[in-house]
Amino acid sequence: MIRRFSILLLTAASLLLAQINQMPSELEGVDVEEKLGAQVDGSLEFINEAGRPVRLDSFFNQGRPVVLNFVYYECPMLCSRVLNGVTSSIREIPWTPGKEYELLTISISPRETFELAAAKKQGYLSKFDRPAPGWHFLADHRDAAKKLATQVGYGYKWDKSRDMFAHASALVLLTPQGKVARYLYGIQFKAFDLRLGLTEASEGKMASGKMEKMLLWCYQYDPNAKSYVMAARNIMRAGGAITILVLGFSLVRLIRQDKERHS
Image 1 (cartoon, rainbow, N blue to C red):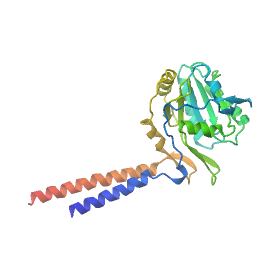
Image 2 (cartoon, one colour; image 1 turned 90 degrees about the vertical axis):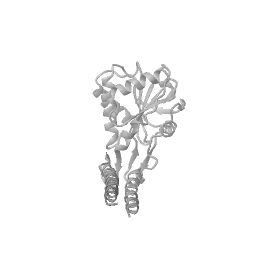
Image 3 (cartoon, helix red, strand yellow; image 1 turned 45 degrees about the vertical axis):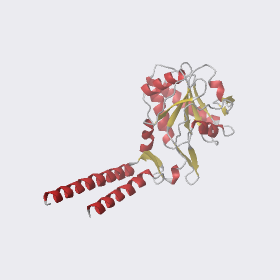
Image 4 (cartoon, helix red, strand yellow; image 1 turned 180 degrees about the vertical axis):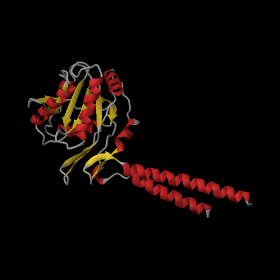
């Protein structure tokens, strides 16, 4: 009977954990697959804030590391928080975009124009509150954003039913030679982590961010709220599963101890 009871408890916990790990259909394919050392295609062209086509490799010609920041400018929720996080982080480090590194904010939406990019740039440069000649806001051109995102492992997709993109929240750091060096996850990026990542990228060093990737999964697309929110429901499920396991093993142990005392 003890064995049967234990199996039932373990089965219940396994079902709860399976629910936690199940990816919602809205987020299938929306992930970040780390591709350290992957070389980006420098021939990809984007449209800059002035409406001119620019090749990706033009941002690597000064021997500086490059930060990729994928967003879309009309995003109603997550992108603004990410951009605010980027702005806050780069304000805390004593380096300037255009001197020690390049920062590319790239729209993943093929429908967005360079005028939107220019307006967004003006708004965030005013928040940065100092010159940043190396912070570029780019519009997509001939699907270059999708190609680049695929090369660095950044997954996203268009949700037709809600007329919006489902996408991850991460920065991708590249070496001066255009190779993937590091990933930073979340919507708030520690200045220390960014500075260390840029330093290592400038030296051609690469480091995995898989431990920090768990931060990404604290946020989940909620189709009811139409936003990225803290997945409280999943946290409660996880707590429930852990509670079942703890109670189950404790109960089994008590039953065995009682049985031994009466044997």
